[in-house]
Length: 498
View: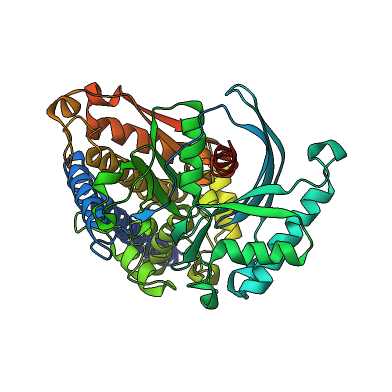
């Protein structure tokens, strides 16, 4: 019996040692897998790093490209398009005006009533609808018939007192895509962005397409202005504060415009305006510089996009793409370790993770990161431990921080070009006294990414102060313009009538 007991005891020890060995091997394997994802995160942080020195190099590159784009057609990645907007609303405008805004994700229709004073701006009946996805690759006739039908329904809801009988309604068409203008009310589409792909529309007059569709529906409405969304935001900003000289949109896409002196627009020599200046639509989404911190995820996203080798800056800072950069990082982590559990096919789908979900995860303040868990579950990744959820939040933070800091560098580049960054900028004939005197400068900003993603906004504003320095940044005011592009476009039409 004693020998049997000893044998049993020995067997138990061997079994216990075997179990312990298996557990140790699992722990070692688990640590290796965790080390793998930590290394992926570290690589991402290094690739996205945007210290202030690097940002200032981006600022300089932006200012130089702006100058080149103004000097000649095709001289820069920045198109620097003339808008033929040279007189901005002054606050004395009166009457009722309409705006229809075709953006990247939504279209809006609204009516504005003006009473001749800045304090009397009545924005009425704002309608906001998602753009049906099938319209984005349909035909010009289908797209504009849909917009005209939507406009007709909007007007049918009006009360009798909203417009005098028999008076033609004046409409601003806010169009968030690159257009080469021949006047404030006409211009041809250069190319689509933000996922639209209606190739037969390239080269067509956009305002005329809408006017024809409105006429077809029997609407007594005149397309009085074709306005880029950034120009609309600048218009509203200027209406409220004449120190507004720059406007930027951070939404599905991203773009900027600013007020430039006509004598600095060298490619259009002899251009005369009553104000001596003109709003220039930069189309800055296509900006590129070797100083931009690009990662393998950005390279893959670009290669697989419908517009590869194009819109490089926009793909690093705009709402359409941030979610997909985060998705690609998580996908790689899940492929190189099992910390996310069984592989999810959903994670392999481009754009399945939207930037609003990234924002929700990034700003999740629940103790157990329940919103992160919910969104991961929607992606087919369920029951991940808290430390993995924290890792996902960190990925969101790294990608968004880079976006916000690069956005700030873009704004600072504009300020440098027009001599509002404290350095004198690329002056093109500015006097020494103008360079030395720091002016108050207002930057109007709109778009869902800026308005709804707090961390993006904070990173952008923090970096702008870093780049400009405390002394200069106190003269630079960033103002949010909700629905600014639509309202401001209607104000531009009003200024044309007054």
